[in-house]
Image 1: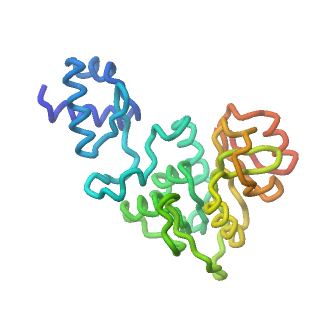
Image 2 (image 1 turned 90 degrees about the vertical axis):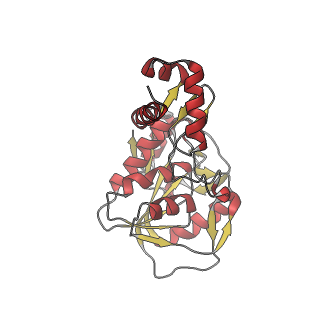
Length: 255
């Protein structure tokens, strides 16, 4: 089998399975581990996959190979504690939106995953989270409002002191580093400040939180339970915290 054909089959397998171990690819392509490792190095150098220990993962984002400043800019699948769950959470958040809704979207790895589901919609996205914005721009998504300001590279944010008094949206969709009876918490202070600003322009707050962060205190208190309208999380989330959410009239989606 030629190298080109092997490469195509590896990339096709990753599209369907997200991760691939060297052993899985050896069995799939009926060739040696050394050959597979060379193929993964070649494809990683071309920016077509991300080589990881003993295997490879699908790339989530546009190719940053020719732009050194973009290295580390987009999340990788291995950055997620449970990629499949995070992806379901992001999909559910987009499914909440109606056509031509205005939504404000905050920073976070889960919010980045909303991008591919937004592509089939006509939802108007207001955000300062550059990985999501640049992904949507790269896919020719026309319904964007960039909340501008100073670029903070360490958090991939545009930070502005200005208020946007004319903006209004149905949802503010945010992620967090923890969710307890005290509310949604976040560790990044600048992100916290920017998402607090967005709250002024949205009717409802949607919090996207992985199941393993429910019951965990993750930093600065971003929104109390009384400020959160909807929580989307995984089915393994702490049931005691979920019960407290419902007592505060928070609508819960388990995915």
